[in-house]
Every structure is written in C-alpha cells, then in structure tokens.
Image (cartoon, rainbow over all chains, first blue to last red; front, side, top):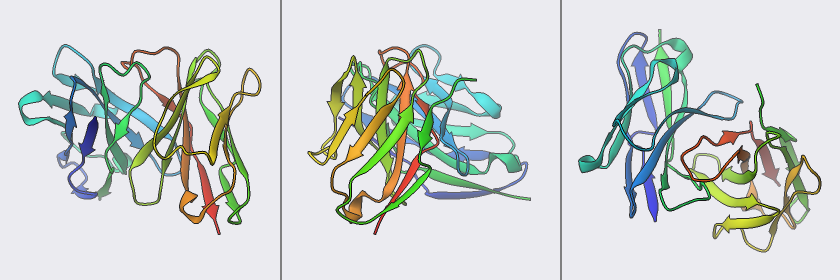
Length: 115
Length: 115
C-alpha cells in the first residue's frame, strides 16, 4: 500500500524567491515518484518523475526534486519563482510491482506567487 | 501534440440520474484510467482498463460505476444513479504501455455536480 502526504495545502512565495513544496510518501515496495502540475482549468501535466538511477531529477520549467529514501521524501524545488508557476502541484507514488500504473496522489499544494 | 480529450467539461444533474462521461484517449495508447477529485480533496484512482477489460479498481468503484470502450476511440465512465457525493472532477488518463515508469497523460477533467 502507498500513501502520499503533502505538507501545506497552500504555499505563497514572492516572485524570484525559492519554491519548496514538500512531499513525503510511504510505500511497502520501492517507489516510483512523480510531480504533476495543474494550471487553472487544465488537466494534470507531468513535471518530473523518479524511477531509478540519479536521485536528483530535473523537470520542466526549471523544477527539480530529490528522492531521499532515508527521509521518504521527494520535495519539489525551483530556485526562482515566476508568476507563471502559480498552479496546484500534486505529488504521486506508484509501486514498482504495480504494472497497471496506478498512482496514489497527495492532497495537492496550491502555489501562489506574489509580484 | 496528442492529448486526451474529455466531454462534457461540466455537467449538472439531479440525484438519481444516470451520467456518462466521455474520454478520447491518445490514439496509440493501450491503458486507460479514470480518477476523480472531490473538491478540496485528493485525486483518487477509480479504475484502470486494458485489453477491453477492467484491470484494477478501487473501493470507490462500486456497482454504480461502469466503464466501456464502445468503439476504437472512446472510453466512457457511467454512473448509474448519481448521489450527491459523486460531485467531483473526473479525470481520464491514458498511457501507451504498462510498467508504471511512464507518464500518464491526463485530460482536462469533467466536473460533475449532483443536485
């Protein structure tokens, strides 16, 4: 069984500031981890994913995330926020024995960027 | 760029009525999914579909729900007799292959409001 916890349902940063969105997971098997973004009135779009190999993964729009097994975390960061980053972000986990791609999502974090 | 399309974008229905939500997955994809998000809550897995049959379903996907691929392009979710608690955003997703390392492509969602 898997679960995902996103700390902070709302995060507000100033334009140009560091973005840090937290994600912790639990999984009984080695996980695959994902971050999705949802812009207003749009579907879920993959930002980045960790499957195997390098634990620091880079995604679109300057975002990156680091898989830390010891902390069961997969926090999302971006060095400098843009106004266009305002959206809802979802962390998700899938177990490696799950051939059906079933994702378990966190509750989401709404990122607000102030000018 | 290929995309998953969903109709309708918003449907309002009376409790007890049947609802059909439609999805056109990406044309060469083989695995199809429905997820839902009740307002303010997590995105939850409902069902996955492969080779013309359900491969996995969650506890939410009870006898009131059914899925069908009536032709080569559409993938539908039917709710037989809607309840107030069925009000949610329903997302369709698809992927070309199994193995849970790939990206699920999501549609923009269908918002269902049950009165």
